[in-house]
Image 1 (cartoon, rainbow, N blue to C red):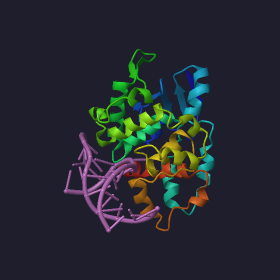
Image 2: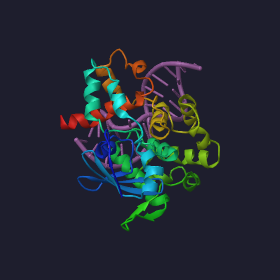
Image 3: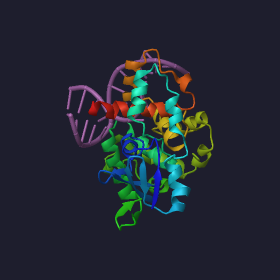
Image 4: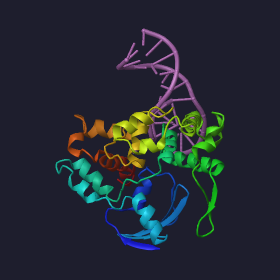
Length: 272
DNA sequence: GGCCAGGCTTGTC
DNA sequence: GACAAGCCTGGC
């Protein structure tokens, strides 16, 4: 069990920001997270965070996963003071961090995300994990499932994942699993590429377009230059930035700004 | 070659 | 009926 005081970190905001679909609220302060074959519980009260794991696992994995070595205050301070909308959005989502998630998990998750909502995306992912992942037990003896490997889905008929409610996206996931399992696309190479190269390579995968490639680059490769434009972001940009979003000003942290806007558009309006 | 309309699963509002 | 972290295909 590790206790830390962390600024700019809010597990609830990270959970609701729609970058991770395997994070679950257990009670008012506690969340459980599954990443690859690992499981973690996190509790938070203000700046105080408790990570229920051993110190070496925290240092070697979860610290990087939650991006705790990155200074988000610096990004927020770089925001144009005249830009009231972005200032408000960044204050509203001040506890958001860009997670370092697994590349393969993000490819599949954002293939499923298209023309879909976050609740249903979560359900689809739970379904494929239960059906094609491996069963594990957490420290409390509760069962959870690992994320299915490319190999475990590569041999399926293209329609097989419709059973998991993926709909027409089933063939995207199966064909992509095949491309990766066959070595046609090398994930390790993509991990070492620049943003531009990685995006281009990812877009060779069946079902991966510009928006999905940007999400993968941002949430698993830590390319902060990626700025995924979906319907919500499109609306915000049309409404608040008719001249276009000032990408040049935010060079190197465009993706962080995108997350502030996305979260504000999705959650800010509910609360008012 | 680029551009654009239409189609695609399914659940929720 | 419209829409949800869109993409592919075919026709021009």
